[in-house]
Length: 337
Image 1 (cartoon, rainbow, N blue to C red):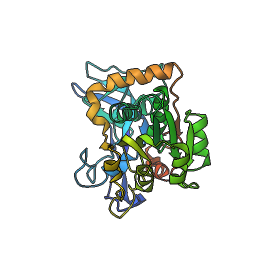
Image 2: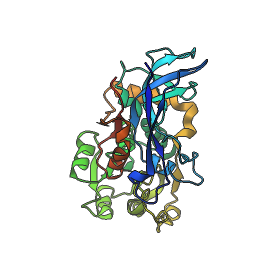
Image 3: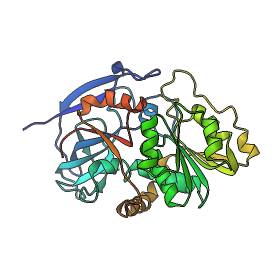
């Protein structure tokens, strides 16, 4: 029986908010694997803020998705046909499979995952690129020490929630910044942060003075904009800022808004460093091993927000992310396991 592969392709480069017309829904027959290839059925797609940046032309840390190409996406799936010596039918794998139902691969960039150890969506979150981003960004760049104050923006999201939990494991006082009462309650009650600041209803600068009276030693930034400026005003001497993302800026049609008070870095002898997880590829196994140990010991909680609907639901699911409607890691279910 021949299979049909439904896909979502980039139809135009968005200006500002992504629109339905920026996507093209296509279908094509599924090819059988040749020598050294395998066919993966995509089961779950990772929905990430970085996708918005991948849609733009211009220089970045990774080449943009070209107009007409299948949209790039991390995913987990099941091998349903294989002529590759390293993968057997029935294996579960993670990798960049794209927004489609099937992916023909030569095996490069694919990693086997075990659904008996953790649910498949967890391999897109805490035990995937999300967790690795939090792990290497905080530990290698943030370099937190016991007793220091760590502030995390986007604290109820996929990366931020893991950052805060790792900081607690390392003996730090952790303050999360999130939008809305529900998310702030989750940050404290589910993820164990010491305090949460609701940027939608609170004066962030005033709240930081209350919760971080001695200043911020480490700031893990996922949102940029006004929140970044507020934290810059509260830096402790020698503070480290990890720039992971700037989700507040991604859908703006105007140039990215930079911090006006960056001289706080000089005054406080602080540093601000950009972080891209792909730079740590040769250490992924180290990070996954440690994250899995913490999770197995109950010290690291996973939260996946799984949306059903298949690849056709991708455009709307991506908008959910930018509307801040997700809790934890946003995942789109493509097919039954």
